[in-house]
Image (cartoon, rainbow, N blue to C red):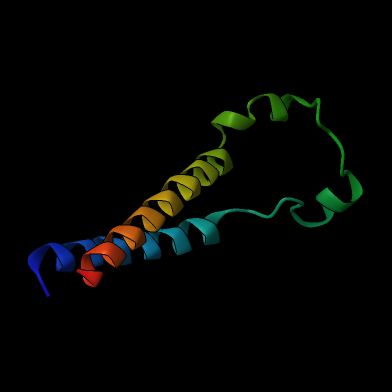
Length: 82
């Protein structure tokens, strides 16, 4: 096992753990009873700042970490097959 393969494997494992943690920190789409009773509300004040909320940042982090994980998996696959 080469040094590059070890480093990439460690980074991939850290990305995997980070994805799990970020997904666990996210709240559901319909959080509790308020989401079931008041399902609408697309034009509320809070939805205007949705891109700046903590959940939006977690969703963005999930996308970036998932992309990093996929790229690292492909790179490691090509390195091991050599």
